Image (cartoon, rainbow, N blue to C red; front, side, top):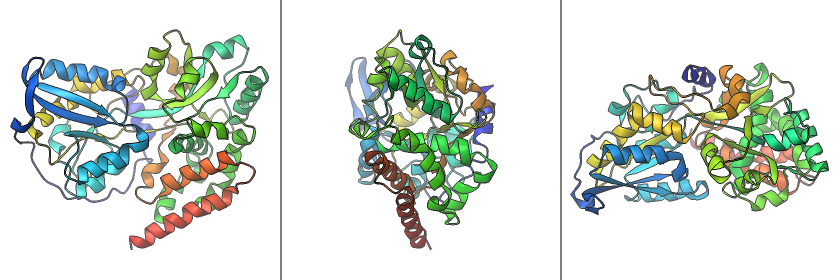
Length: 427
């Protein structure tokens, strides 16, 4: 089933050297300080922070309400643009919500600092990947897997007799045709720099990192044995063609990832790069929209990829005043029912829990082969702490802001210097 395909997709890509961490604590605690009157009587309030909207976890929240009537779970959404800074600052300051979602690459450092509880006992029935562990322990109940491709408006394509592209050059041709008939080809929230990063990596993975010549790049780059400027310059130059032609342009730097979908669901733009977390919101915004998801494309129909990995973990604040109640919430999240509910909120995703299976929505038919053949990767999980994620994101923003005046190699050399400085600091 899909879970087995997903495991093959992550094989090799997830052999990250995780930072060692030392943190031990049980799941007990006092619930009294957080107790207050709720709709159903005296309930213990448990707070939860996550970077995806409430709609993506609505099924899970309903399940928790049903299973734990004595607990009132308050969900707090924090946008991606502020998430890392906001949550880390509060947590490290001894505050923060009881349950906090973190990506896998953020968990090792926090576990090492002793601000997260050990949750290993909750995940005994999960088929975990290497990135879930910190020194053999687990500090987050796994979220659903995620991946990103390019959503496209089926009606626009069909009405204008446009075939869905199978290569990057065909994608450029489709953009030109759409532009010529007055339809905006792409919308992308380039004001959120990571959206450009994922868009570029989708192409670079399809064309290079998932091919023989580039399969070792990420590991070597993380060790300082390969340079972005030497290896990625030609691929950034090729990706840049969509910018040079104006289909991704400086106007999009004024749009963040939360504003971008409006143009897609209203038919203003024919394509929008996003992932599993957006499926339900598309349906909610325009129930009549006929759409599909295509993979990121390379030079041949066989060169495709999705940007994706396991989603991260729901972590328990070691200083939570409601630790026992929060632990019970995490027990529900870790249960088969909880994992199924997570997948329901992110159609197309899957769970690492053994025996929990999820089917692809019909809109995802075009990415099934990419998933089945294991062409799914999240390159930056190799780059933990070295600054390359932000550096490359900003470099791509600079290219979009001024494509003719920005030297690609110089931008990538800046990232290389930043990584080199980081590696020296670790010696």
